[in-house]
Every structure is written in C-alpha cells, then in structure tokens.
Amino acid sequence: MRYIEGQNRNQLVIFPTSLNDAIDPDNDVRFIDLFVESLDLEDMGFKVDHVEDGRPAYHPQDLLKLYLYGYLNSIRSSRKLEKETRRNIEVIPLQYGTSCGF
Image 1 (tube, rainbow, N blue to C red):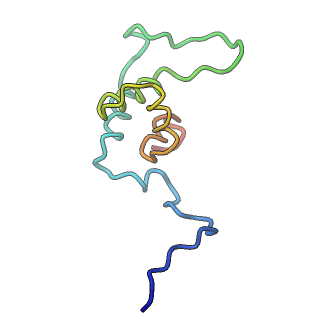
Image 2: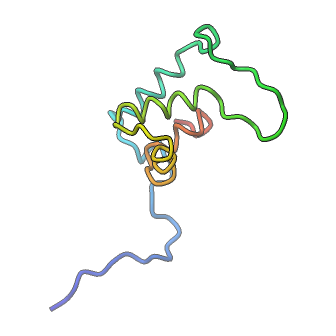
C-alpha cells in the first residue's frame, strides 16, 4: 500500500508569485482596501503629518484598514490582530498599503 507523499519543504515557491493572485477577487480585504483608499482622512480629523523623530510611524490608512479587518472578523484585541498580520495571507497587503500592487 502506498502512502500519500507530501510536498518538498525545500522548494523555493509555495505561494503564487503575487499576493494579488493569492486573494480571491470577492474577498472582503479588497473592499476594505478600496474603501479606505477612497477616504480623505485629513478631512475626517486623522493626523496625517508626523514628526520625523525616532521610528517611522505607520500610515493612518494602513492602521484603519487593519482595524476594519479586525472589526469585520471579530478580532477585537490588538495583539490578536498583530498575530493575524503575521500568519494570515489576506491581511499582508493591508499592512503595506498600496506598495504591494494590491
């Protein structure tokens, strides 16, 4: 009797070459991204300018995207949301803004 053989763990490519290809076209993450990108956060009272002291700040749009993702997925804890950004492939484009080509 033969057994099911797993994939080679030393292969270089496991996921599609682009994050855009890895996420379904009808995923909520795409809506969140488009929605927040369409907002003028400065007119809504967000601070968009920051002082260049110390560690660079996260852009308010990226933080709002992560917050909305957490709200829609019942993730209320910031620690759990941080964990999602490290393990969940659909959250990765949200934390890097539009630089991923998403």
